[in-house]
Every structure is written in structure tokens, then in C-alpha cells.
Image (cartoon, rainbow, N blue to C red; front, side, top):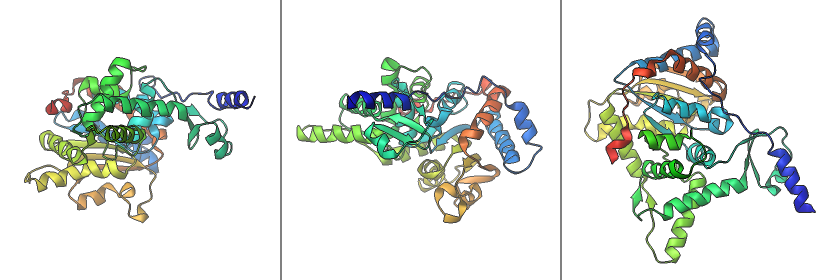
Length: 349
């Protein structure tokens, strides 16, 4: 009886799926143009959108999408996938959660759900429902994600892998067994767009990979490992070869600092002529006063030799509310249609 009641309650709470925004379905150009004549965050967003369009128009510019936070779960997942499909980005640096718990998770056929009510979190725990603010995830489905990561690791040669190399194998899995065509991980595999997660095990991938190592060790067998140094080296190699680069950053934290540090790393390796990131947009709600990387302004990054200050814009807004406007504007202006396709992932084959 209790199990039946719990099943019914869980079904009630997981009854409304998050529907991801389709930037092709509406044209944000008129509202962005209007915002450019306003003030405050509206004008900041309009300038940020102009800078992103300049990145797309610059045929020499490689563009990196940098994602931290939970916008993928909140409804921007298809937005990011469309940027990749339409050749509007050339590389991705993200948190493990954005790539594994959110995109790969939905690529396996699972969903995120709107929390139409938020009962006591202990109640959610008893029902195996995880909460991201007003969004729910079925923990049992998330464990399927963990187990799939384990299975992928089990099928690989036991050697070091960068996160990019392992995520490529995740994309290969989705291309064969996935349930969602517009998964960022799947599309990245198909279009040779590299995805880096510098803190990869801080996600559902961590559970599956720990299980892989523990079980292999118990059996006296070698196991695969993630090579964080290879992440930094590979991403820096792309920066050196790319030359002109632009950053479209949602949130901050480790992904933001990781991509910015490639300039400094290139200099350390003797490439003193490496360009700072020419273009940079950051959308964040972080406060600058605590000195954290998430909140450091792009002008502050210039003092470290990472970002040029001529074409940068901070937008202080919740990214889920403004990214659809920025991305729709850029998609409809169409500068992506004749961009060179870089396929940076191929340089590691």
C-alpha cells in the first residue's frame, strides 16, 4: 500500500516536463534592437548580442561556449545544441553537471521536470526525487546515467583520457543508442566539436568512474583514468592554433577560468605572440565583491593578460531569461551561414 501511494505521489510531482526553448521559433532581433535604445541590463544585453554577432562575422574567430550553472536543466539545453548544430560555436568548456547530469542524461531518454510545488525536501528524498531550485530529476533515472558512464568506461582501453576524449566516447554511445537527436554531447561527436569538463568527476560521471576503478582494482585489472593536465594541454593547443578567439560565457567558476588561462599557458610554453581572447561576453548574477572567479569582471581578466577589453560585455542577469534572446537574435541574423567549420576535435585523432 505504501509503495503504491509513493508511486502515485512521485508521478504527480514528475508530471510536467521542462520544455527547452527553440531559438528558431521566434525572432528576437526587434526586441534586441529596442533594448539597445534602453538602459541598464537591457542595453548591456543588446551590446553583448552585438559582440556575439561580431564573433560570428569574424571569419578568423573560433568561438567557445562556456557553461556553468543549471541553465541546461532549466530549459536552455536545445539552445546550446542549436548553436553547435548551426556552427555558431567551435568548442565547449562546461561543468560536468551541465554535460552529464543534464545533456547526456536527456540524451539517454530521461527528462527534467518543472516543480509545480516544492514539498519538504526530506519528502523528495524519500521519493528519490532530486531538486534543482524549481526543477526535479528522477534519481532512479540519474542512476541509469551513472551506470551508463560505468559501462562506457568498462569498454575503453585502460589508459589516461582527457575529459574531451571521454566525452567523445559518450557522444559515440549516444550516436548509436541515444534517444534524443539534439543532444549537445551527441552533436559534438558528430561535428568534431570538442567538449572539455575540467572538473568532470564533480557530476554523475564521478560515480560511474569510481565504480569502474574500484571494481577493476578488486579484480586486479588496470583501469582508465582522467588526465586533467591533458585537458589543459589540449585546450591550450586549440587556442594556439585558433589565433583569434571569442568567449560566450554563461556563469563563471572553473570553466570560465579554465578557458581564459589558455592564453597564459600558451605564453608559458613560449608562444609569446598568442592573442588574448579578442571577444568576451559573460552572463552572470554573481557579485564582484567577494573576489571570486565567478564574479570577476572581464576587465579584471585583462589584468592577467587573458581578455582584451575592447570587445567585452558583462550582463548581470539570470542566463535562462536572456540567453534565448541573444541566441535567437544571432541565429536569425544568419552570420553563421557562411562561417568556416573548424572541427577542432579532429586535431586529436
